[in-house]
Amino acid sequence: MSQPEFSTAVLAELSEILGEDLHATLLEYLDDSSALIDVARRAALDRNMNSVRECMHTLKSTSTVVGAVALANLAAELERLVRTGLPADIDAQLICIASAFERVRAWLTKESAIRSSGPGT
Image 1 (cartoon, rainbow, N blue to C red):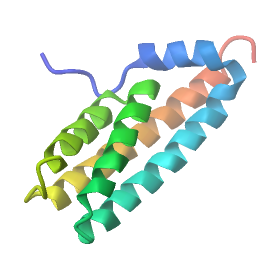
Image 2 (image 1 turned 90 degrees about the vertical axis):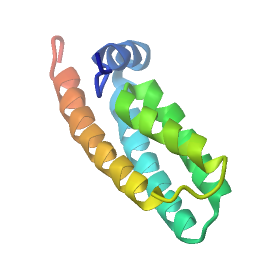
Image 3 (image 1 turned 180 degrees about the horizontal axis):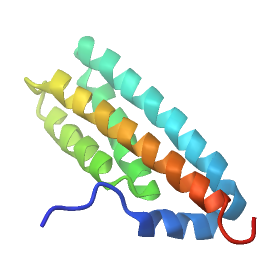
Image 4 (image 1 turned 135 degrees about the horizontal axis):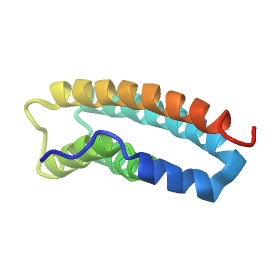
């Protein structure tokens, strides 16, 4: 059985912890993640695997915190691969990561809207 792409349970826990700060935190995550993917793409073009690895490490960690399971797994896999050098399919992997990020953006936008318009608002 495959893992789900998103974890609503993780996001619910984060919402409980952050309360009304959840929306701002998710916006910051989305902005930062988009920037990390852009930096990783440029670093890959420059063959700077250390920078790609650092970007993927951060993306993996922050995606885990917000419940973006599939994106975290993709970032973890690329982080692992670049430790051994330049993966032959790094461009394809970064495209996959960017695509997964866009699905995360749509999911978090929907979930954030639901949570901010839920009971008590």
